[in-house]
Image (cartoon, rainbow, N blue to C red; front, side, top):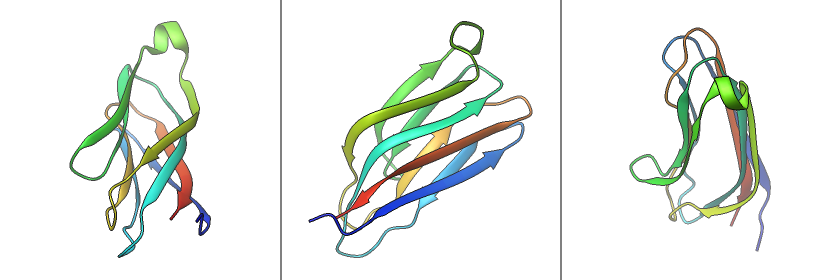
Length: 102
């Protein structure tokens, strides 16, 4: 049963950004979307803090600097953090991920 929605945002400068939703013992997160922007070609990933569970590559010259991926259903292992990562940026980036908790 869905026990609420959540989202986390992080901003970065010249080395990417990492948004972390802290683990809750006995519960799992389901990530349903990730969005943000970056000024450099980069990868955007969703992890459990150790394992990459989802990833895309961004080419800012072809796709622009903003991204939004919705309609996801990525379960994070029980009692584990949900992490959204932009791996690279030159001077400005932001990542936000969200979903619900079980």
